[in-house]
Image (cartoon, rainbow, N blue to C red; front, side, top):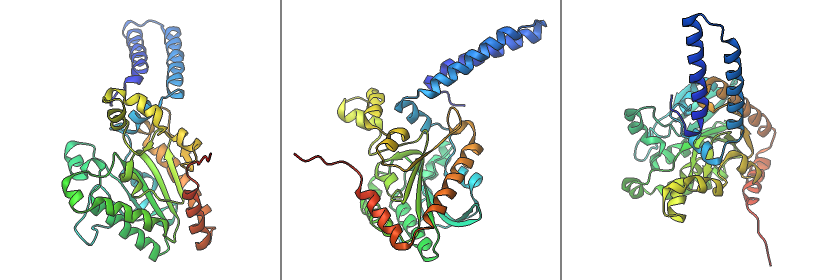
Length: 317
């Protein structure tokens, strides 16, 4: 498993415990007291590290290669997924899967970003960075959800929309901007969850929602910490400082009232227990659907409008 820098003290203690156990077994020595002391120290170290994660630590966890992706959550939290393809204009975008599914017996339309586990799949999924076709496909599926009166669930996990020449030629800025407007007007409940990376307009293109939730160790920002550091400090090495200043972590965004809730992860991050994280995600989605379905169409649209109009503070002279 990928080892993060701040986790090294935990791994070193785990190795020491393994050595003591091996020595005790091979030499038939009672070392239970020493092992117990080391295990107590390990538990304390693990608790101190994970209870005091910095924003940069959370960014590292959000990018962990073993972290569950969109299709993992579809397998563990949803059922009967029927993928739909194509934007009916140019083609299909494998970085943005979507289709009909069920969650807790409820029919929904689910859309999201998908990364790859290896080089081959990452090339197919474009590292989770969608093209214009992905955003146009997403909106097509949202309109289907509206037609059949189904809630829309979007699962966000992208470093950003694809910035290549082809994407610019096919007007990716217009595709995202159009989604922002149309999602604001959807007449069905929309719930967005940031699973890992929530990068810039690439995330926001499927992020206009009645409820925006984040996993505990996800991040959501207008630019990556490295990009911010390159602009302000002229070097990527200042990314940890940028992450701190940008207030991009779930706890900070909840305090700023830019998101509506934080979904807890297992100790150490979602990559340590996919099933437990998926169960928490499922419960959060079902709870929000139940609350939103009590609203009339007018109440839903008014509340969504009011939610986004309330963002930010203005101070007059």
